[in-house]
Image (cartoon, rainbow, N blue to C red; front, side, top):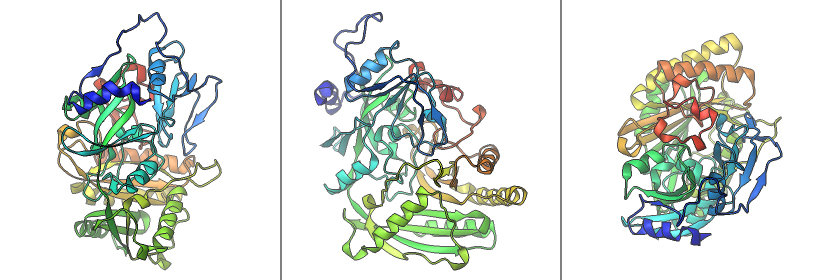
Length: 477
């Protein structure tokens, strides 16, 4: 497998990462692809669902490639593998990104090798990893070698390729807070079936655009991700009951200013916040023995809470923090989640990015909307997740989330425990209008559901017809 990319790898190491690696001879379009397909191929009309079982699709072909040649064969052979070819990983997205009825669903999870640690042409320590590798696997592999990526994943099943060109969020220590910011180079198959390499060392503009493309410009095969010596984190947990949404906003701002990174779970209708102030705690890759077994209990409680969509809701009149302060390895906090059944509580959510300057307006108006909805329909979300992220310069994130230039953003995400609940769906659809049109929040096509075409724009140059499903086509502009 590695032999196929020898020329690509050499070009990256020699500073020619922007060049497209063309085959020695391009066969005529009326001839078959030069590679047979060796992976799993199903064309039996089976239906596939996302993790939350809220969206399903019936592709003409479902394929699991086991080599880079397999991916090239799929893209080149339009007859056997009908357009669009849509790459998927763990299918965790809450929106309709997996829907590709009649097309080709290309699952990358068998391309999951961690190739190794290297030093790139800029002197940076990087890890080279295949697109189908899960984030938990990558975190554990790096942890055993004393390294880490700046991004601490919430859900460890997410695959590297999907998050390298998709939307993510985390209240990170010494990091901007989204995974793709740490990706320094990519190898992928383009719409002609050619093996390509691109990096921030050569042709920066095209590289940064590619990372905003949601896989609509090519099938990601490998990523190079910057790593650093592993660090420990100290979390200080606190509970806060406020009298007004304005008071809640001010308290959250105060807590955010007093730490290195900050996360909160907000029970908005009760004006209650469970807060996690995070502090740098020096070098280290293993959770200290003095933190155990308390840390593992905390980790499992957090996993259960997220898995079940913050159900049951806590009794805020009788709530005490499980742990007030603890130091741990960031890699140890990355969790894995089991695939739920249709009758099981499971997390579902909406996502919106706002500039920090708007936090009072966002919380106040969201509170008013939630209370009015509760009075009318006897329904509220279980909780709201509040993340703070640092935006990079615009050239490094030219489109989509976090593309407004240097500054601080926060995301304010309502969560619920049943994706198919009619009242939850009604709440989310109506809240979209407030969050996006009134408050100016930026949505995500993979993390914000029920978007209308005028609520999100993906530049046409970031999409090729071979990879663009009907879902994404509605947003091209």
